[in-house]
Image 1 (cartoon, rainbow, N blue to C red):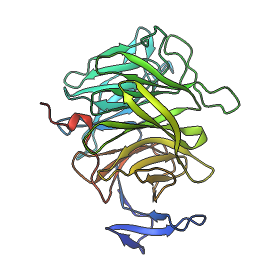
Image 2: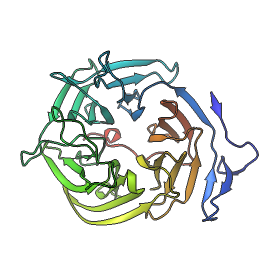
Image 3: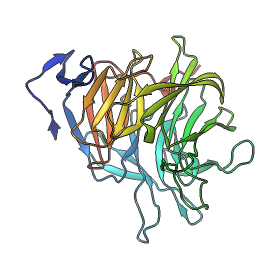
Length: 338
């Protein structure tokens, strides 16, 4: 299924321009052609490619016959749209809510799970391990939502939920209550450090690197305030200088998953607003808005070494793709091992 919101548009390097923001006419609204790949994947999230070019995503909202959490990890054949479940994590009687995925250099999938913490999945046989239940200080982890590797192999993780199972499931998404969403870093040596807390639903996360590949800034989405926050990365699990990095437009929606392109633009899913927001390398306000054929984009991920962007969303609980004008920034798993 192909969709182009407006056909009679100008073009920006092949991407149709369908207008400009009324309150900020310098911001171009783009209308690329989207192609739907699959739908009906409940809570569609966590798009990622492994080192072999195989595509995976998660279905966090799946339940079992008793209406208990039974989220799972899927392999999607992008040519046939066939969806194959490879893992449904469960610890004791507690099913998972896998929400974010990353791939490492050994081709394992790392899972940010809202009920089970940080997991690792073997893509060959679908088996999983619960890698982290507690942080280095012995505190039970909060439920995890999204994750991003830096080029040194440290996994940065958002955690907008309360304590993981068997504790009752809670989320820091009520602006009338004290916020408790957090951010963790699992270092390359698998030590889990709580980096910060106090977020109204910490969600998408991304790492900005220097030109020579050193981790530079951590970008964290706070969904219910529509803000993006940055920290200077000083080392594994060590940050300082928290600052407001970006603000999403409008009064609806909020930032969800995000990914960098090769020139440093950050593409952010604006969940509930029907757009992907494109921020320049310095943040601030979007320089482009990408109009989607659905209202609730949840995450974005580039196909390696290409301009193709894969988008998950919660209107049709689907997976779509479109072509951006730049290639994606290389992921940690794509780096050559020495």
